[in-house]
Length: 228
Image (cartoon, rainbow, N blue to C red; front, top):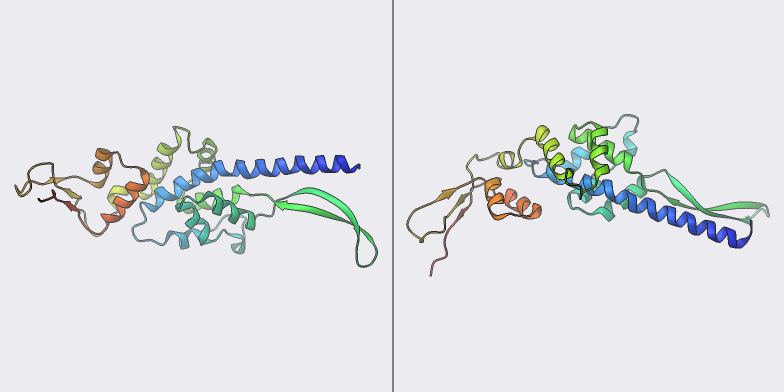
């Protein structure tokens, strides 16, 4: 094959490789939503350890994805998750090949290979860990995080299996967060609402809601008016 054709073939394979990396980001971003939704219901559990210990049919224990993958998901670190998938993947793409003489003076073919990200094992392990059918996780993951159906479906699936984040976030106390109303300080009036209601009232972002849920897991919160 002419050198020019080899270079063009390599460029084409590189484009395929880059496209595979980009395509992997869509399902991983949705799996981030699954992980974060489950973390809101952790109740002190070490979910990364439970994830690493989750078995998958047809997968040897040594080939299961490690706890660090769950940590990357719950932190929303898509790059770190894909790097972990690349380390674990057995799928490769051949970018180019050339012949060279080895130490025994034999002509051998040397291939330039790169590992492709394999999202299927991650989806399977996440599905088993969350006790959601694998085809359901795969379907939701295929929608992408920007699909209007995705967030609601993730929340529904996780709540069906792990309960409400607002309810389970405070195992030590059932008292809702106590918020001082916007009235004169010192009049004794109080307003009680759950963290879920507070989230809706202030239109908190998911990250802000996660912080609030963490704060109210073990105690109630009282917000008082500033005093002069």
